[in-house]
Image 1 (tube, one colour):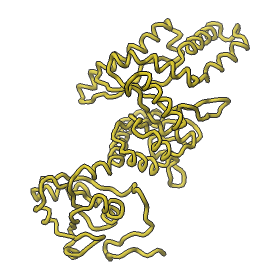
Image 2: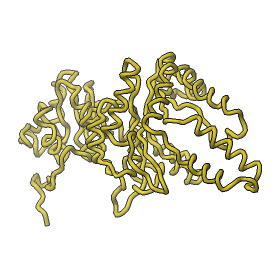
Image 3: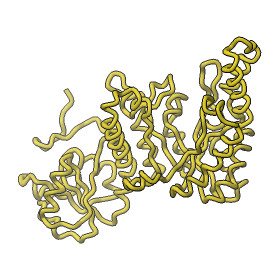
Length: 385
């Protein structure tokens, strides 16, 4: 934590410390359990606002670890078939709804004392090599589960951490999940898998036929609809571990770009809405898509373009002006760049002395799609072949 703060990195969400069976064999179990709850205090000291807690059955874990220790000690010689079957049962043991509820209720005093929200991840049941939906994956039941916990706590202590990798494995409708859970979601966890096997892959990396296995369009549309403005967590541990050591720093850098990209796309409509007035820069397809999707709700004063030949024309119901017209704007009017040359245009506008907010609009993920495209050079709709 100290090293992170020295680098200007601050933590907002924590997870409690816990250990694998190998570690737990080497220490008294009551110490491991004590350290789990001690994590709440450490999270507060780190400046975290929330702590992500998957439901744990401590008694089941302890029994499993004792069997593991016996198996290790006897090297399988005196480990009975009955004990072996019991160990397999414990490895896949999932908390029931009531057990999960009891676990989360036990966290209330620790969370309250340290002023932390408890984030509940969506989950699934596992049996005989197959995963199934349960109360912590079905959006309606999960919502009811969290609301009941908050009623017991007396305030909104519990929120949801939504793992889209799990949604993909369960074949869920992303839009439905998001619309049902809505403002209960405090964290989204973005990762890729092939829809059949659990994995933590970099978004856009599990693709076939030029398409990602995860429907990111539906996810971004759904997050925009619920006006999501909370934390975004990218989990790509498997991608990272699979990469050569010499390339891992590049993987991390790319992961940061992916996280920034998702934050930008998810917040697109919130950014448009926060300004009382706006103009566009660019009079091509991106401008056209803005007007079709947002022109009625968030109308721009006009658009401008560097192409002198089209100044004074009307495009999608708004006038095209020279960039010089931007100098007449009040300083609080935002300029939305509807052109992929974001850096170049930003430098151009700043060199003109403009102090207005400059935002980057993008139409890669639209709330609705159009099959026709506009030819910016010919200034006409492209005809389908």
